[in-house]
Amino acid sequence: MRYQPVIGLEIHCELLTGSKVFCSCRNEFGGGANTRVCPRCSGMPGTLPLLNRNAVRLAAKAGFATNCTVNKYSAFDRKNYFYPDLPKAYQITQFESPICTDGYIDVIGGKRIRINRIHIEEDAGKLVHDDYEGISMADYNRCGVPLIEIVTEPDFRSAEEVQDFVQKIAQSLRYAGVCDGRMEQGSLRVDVNISIMPYGSEEFGTRAEIKNLNSVKSIGRAIEYEISRQSEILDKGGRVVQETRRYNENHDDTKAMRSKEEAHDYRYFPEPDIPPVLFSDDEIEQIRNEMPEMPAERYRRYTEEYGLSGEDARLMTAQKEFSDFYDSAAASAPEYRLISNLMLGEISHLINETGTDISNVKFTPEAVAKTAKMTASGTISKGSAKEIIDILFEEGGDPEKIAGERGFIMSNDASEMEAVIDKVLSDNAELVEQYRSGSEKLFGYIMGLVMRACGKGANPAIIKQKLSEKL
Ligand SMILES: [Zn+2]
Image (tube, rainbow, N blue to C red; front, top):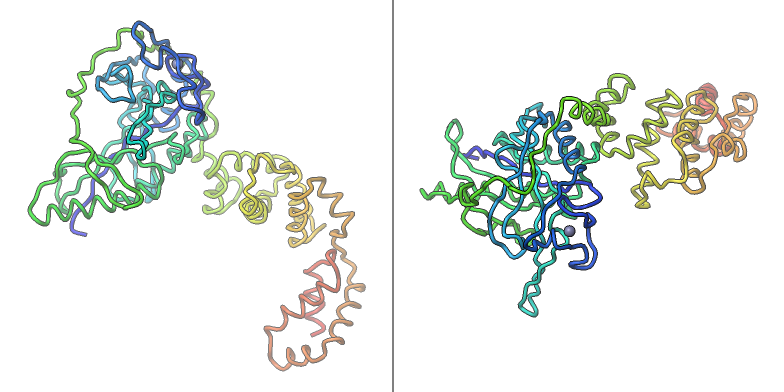
């Protein structure tokens, strides 16, 4: 590749409030068109906005989750533009004084991506195009849904860095209870600003903005497409035009939507109907104290205190509910790695296969902890632990009781096992002969035969030892 891409992001995230940002309509995804609108959010003249306190708190939490400064003073502005999905013909946002500034997130390779600002704004409605009838209809349910916009510095140099950043932002916001991060439902949408410059150059090229990317995969593909499109223009001696483009998933390309606006095109001015947001030091501290443990901190705890591998800790922290479940289990038995193995192994497997959610399983974290404990003490084998998990997943119940009633308790009676081994060896004299004349691979197979003959409760370690002796 001859050119170095330079990328910055604007990420819109819907806040998990009960109601909209300036009225009391419910903030919810889906539902019949225009069923959640009122005079305020549909932009009727003479109505006044009333700022949702919870939206402000969640925006501050987004700031803490991304290492920003939460400002004691922030204020709202009007961004003027006309579009049919914006009935007021202006959007209330924060332009001059955003609520959070100067944060960062570290991405792959330990690179730090700076966050310029996070501001609060209202979402616009949605146009529904009916190609058959040749008409467009406006659905205002989304008007006034509270958003934050996270604006990064142009610090990214590859699609991989961008994708990692977006995943980490979505994860952090979910942990903090700020946004559900569901890109496919549009609750987290990414705009990519991208330009290219010759390697070694310090001067950024002209950028194009790709709007509303709604999956991590689309982000990667749109960036790759833009790099090759802009490279081709520069190679032919042309100039990249500053414009807004739309990525089309089906064609895997981007198309020009409109020339990119500058800030002065919007004629921003202070919103006269909403007083500034003022925080005292105490209030900021109080919100900070409400922050849960974030994924990076959990990762550190899992690797340094619980002895999990980096990869296991990464998988374990990917989803907050899953990680919470693990924490509860780990709190009742310090078999950290065994519990982690059961959760990332058999439990994850069953959950993925059946499309279940960890919050809906039939067993408790304590049951998983007990199963791990029995494995650690040698009461059951690792193989039995898996089978007990299968039973817990199907029926729920108490693992100790299951182990006792269904013959999982490991027997350490060597003489009993020896008798079984002798019988298996004499029944399979031919195999034994092959093994003794050099087919060492057969050991595992013979071991399997003995295990089956001994039943679930046999201790594999003892069998292995006795079998080796006899062979
Ligand atoms: Zn409303």
